[in-house]
Image (cartoon, rainbow, N blue to C red; front, side, top):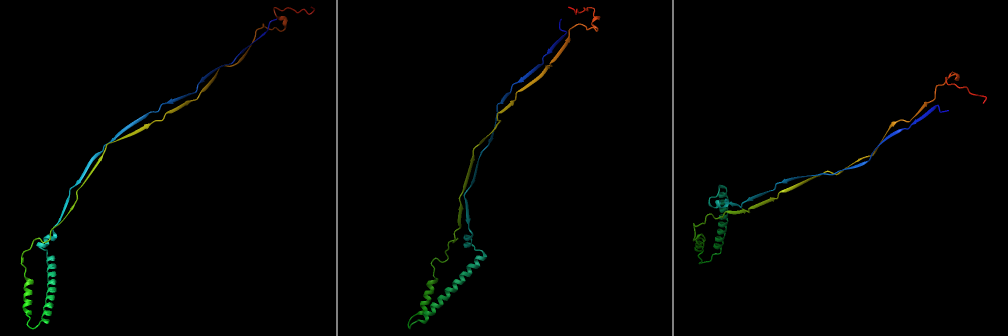
Length: 202
């Protein structure tokens, strides 16, 4: 007697794809920008400045109206002082006069000698020299060299990490195939054309 059922199993099929992890390095770059700043030379000079003040010198030659009034007032005041002193001196001489002494002649001779000037009328003009002052000269020299400016722009290196990956896919599902491989079943069994009775006695 042979088996009537054939059982066949179909295994599962799995497809696996693995992507390895990787670390990528990006090299840094550097940019250099150079700019030039121009210097220069500057010279500033100021010559000697001469200041001449001739106000007093001109007043000694041709005085102004105010200065003339002031000078005449001073001369008048000085003349009054001198005359007062002279009169006091003459009075004292007259009071102390002795018999036989020529006091009047002595006073006249003294007055004559006092008013006698051998260089009368001679005068140096101007009598006051001009006032001269001066400011020293100056020179400023400024020199500035050219400048070079360096501007660095550095990009830092970068690391890029790609993690690993596992991809699984089922290409065939598991299965059980049951197949009947026997012949047809007759009910009752005697209807089978190839029926052979079973010998019970034996």
